[in-house]
Length: 425
Image (cartoon, rainbow, N blue to C red; front, side):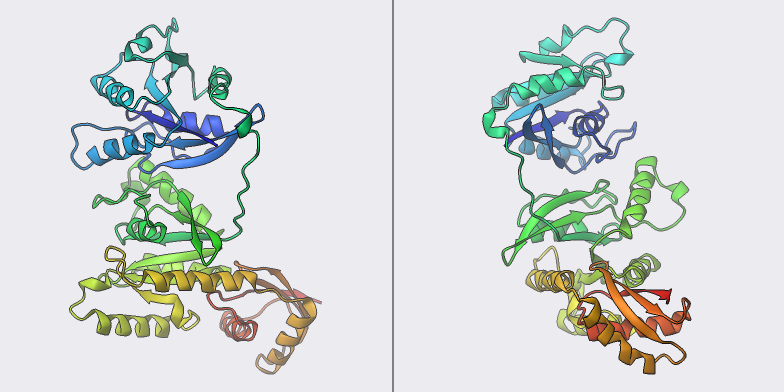
């Protein structure tokens, strides 16, 4: 399958074009340079042929902390079959864009120059774009969709009959890497993948998009997604891109299968970390805690035991083997994290027939006086949801928590606390 990589300077509309071509809103967009910092990939189809589309971060010059984006985006372009070089057609070409063109010509890859924002031109013309030195040029408006069909037709010409078969993505297990900014999420994800997939920087908030890749653990394909860092305080103090990323994260957090929660061990648990744990507990989501940066302790082994003991004492529903002291930067205990992910997969595969589940819950009547449990059905796994048909629809919070913990033991759940729905019968 052919790979088309979108390249360009900051704020020329690369992510808007990506969203337009894939037919969705996967990439975060805002009228400010630097919103896209990692690269996104999606499989899409046009006129019966399939291809992979890759959105990259803007190519910067002159800012030391962002210079790595330039090198990173160009390294991604080296793996492209075709490069889509996006420029802002509503303004004159810049020195940076001529520098990009020089680097792309050295690669010798087929390249299409895309003049975006043509809707802002009184007299649309692509003459200047040919000065970049490439044969294929197309004016478009990613915002309105104007000429994007023509662009797709041009891209289609690079495809062949070999690209007619839809790729099969056999993935039913999804893990989200979550945690505070600079807790080490992106470093951990890179270690799990075995490649430098996610941009790592000391600058807080480097990851603003949801970046997904597939790893293989014991012959099982698992999709792992790096998420924007959790942020504390008043959202109004954040930049608009950061605020958009936070809101998207909050909307998606409760819809995950497994949370791989990266905790900055030297800093300890914060209110934000505890919020993540409570959400996993409430929603029946698989939960794994990675106590990262344990290598910074004076005695890492002793610190690992103390922190693990304290964690499971405060959150007794969390399996001890799902609390992993680690060092993402040194690769310490990465194998144990992979084992914990396998535990979560066990929960995903754990299913009960109604008769079996009813037999598990009937003895619990003796532990919660005043309630009769007639039968139960399993609604889903990870999130683990059980519907119990009973004589009452309401149950005090502390009693419901006790019931859920007892049910977890009987079901054999490893990383998730079942969510219980009571229905009067």
